[in-house]
Amino acid sequence: MPSGGLCLREGRGIDDKVRALILHSGYRVPGGEEQAVDDSARIMRQLGIDPQVLIHQSADQRASAGWSILKSGDRAEDIEHAFRTQAVQLVHVHNVMPMLMDKPVNLAARYGIPAVVSVHNHRGFCINGSVLRENRTCLRCLHRSTLPGVLHNCRGNVVESAVYGIGVQRLKGMWRRFRKVIFPSRYLEAVYLESGLVEVHQAEVIPHLVPQDPMPSAPRDRQFLYVGRNSPEKGLLVLLRAWQHVRTRIGVAWHLTVVTDSRPPGDWEGVNFLPKATRQEVMGLMRQAHALVVPSLAAETFSYVCLEALSAGTPVIASRTAALPEVLGDDSGVLVSPGDCQALADAMERLAGDGAGWERVHEHAAARYHAHYSPAITLAKWRELYRGIIGRDF
Image (tube, rainbow, N blue to C red; front, top):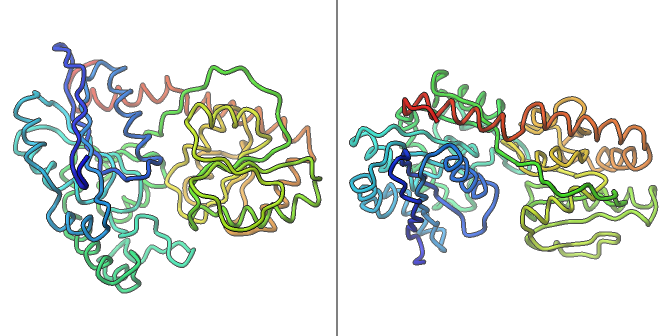
């Protein structure tokens, strides 16, 4: 595919189905947002909606990606062609990158097609999308312009920060044009409502969908599990430092398994590094692990891996930040302060040594998944949302 190009994946084209266009500004390295797009298409098909997925892949060069923001996106004629020829009745935008939002939303309004957006990060007001600066939460751009982000070089350099700052700032008025704005967590909904970008009547909270894997339960190994990128905001180095402390206390029979995109430099004893894995492979690891560790420093808007752990009945040790406490509830894991190596080590030691306590958390994790996040509950929420927008039962 050409850099910065669009790829149209055809739907099944069954005449009695409602047709929808899913738009996403994707990354070269797939992540949680890409998984949400795939899940969105699968949900639509289960409800009887025929989706086409139109993907804008960011250019290889960051400068080129920034330039496409100021142009309001590339190849809008492809989107208009879909509106003209495919009898589209719904536009569903994923990812708040400005480069694929402005023109499609304007075109949808011109053709009288309702548009909704699923929000996966903070990029409606934050130019780096993570509200993280120098490993601390920063909301300076929440109620004002993106100028603080530009001045602090939140995209890594002045030019790129300025380009993204202008792009995000000039699209702030676009949010009110969406029929519904869908958030994966109450946390993220509250942030956007406080920002003033979204009105209460637009906001809907629908968590991500993680099916319960039918694999039989496997005996639990003496291992903790981390699944995520090797990037500073994910807190992997915090976990590795904590692990060096706790391993001497719980014994060398215990191991830490790290599934990530690149191995951090250094000699980490008792750590088994694995490359990025499929969802099925991750679920196999989840069912074997004693606990999942999510040591994030960033303001997580949700957490696929936390939800996958709950579906497997696997206890979670996570940072007490943003949406993570909301996903886990009161009894499905252990929460620690972000970046606190000692607290992280103490939490792993407690779960390793308290069999009865582990069993209680295990049972609460499985119960929370069934009560709040089962596929039947999530599908019902999507069915009701699409019914209200399109005016048709599914």
